[in-house]
Figure 1 (tube, rainbow, N blue to C red):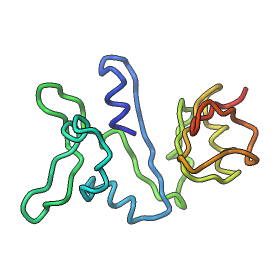
Figure 2 (figure 1 turned 135 degrees about the vertical axis):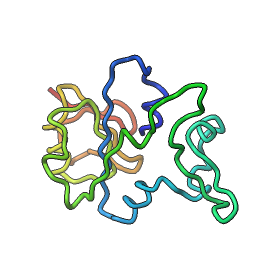
Figure 3 (figure 1 turned 60 degrees about the vertical axis):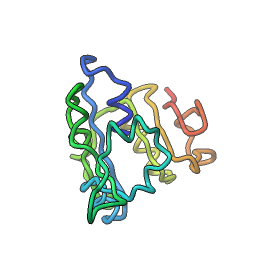
Length: 154
């Protein structure tokens, strides 16, 4: 998500993008913190995105990729990881959550969670869910805009 934000939001746009990533599996968070993945995990990405954001492992690290600390020197962008904070979902504290926000993305479909997200989103803010998720019969606080994109109802 941070990579896509970096690609579509102009560096001079005045945006202050912060991403809070949570998961119930601490191993997933540790992997994300390291930014090292098997090359198979990024196979579906375009060659341009792979070249811009990842570095191939060599020697004993062959078959792995690492999220690049920065993009090529010709176009400096602050590190992708600087935009993300990671937290265990069970330990998600109020002080980690933003007061208000413009977008929330999740793969979990729990009524309480979506109600909480609705309270956090700005009026008409957006919620992205996983491709296998649906808010149908879960909550009426959002309207469906696309397959996995919802907008908070007023």
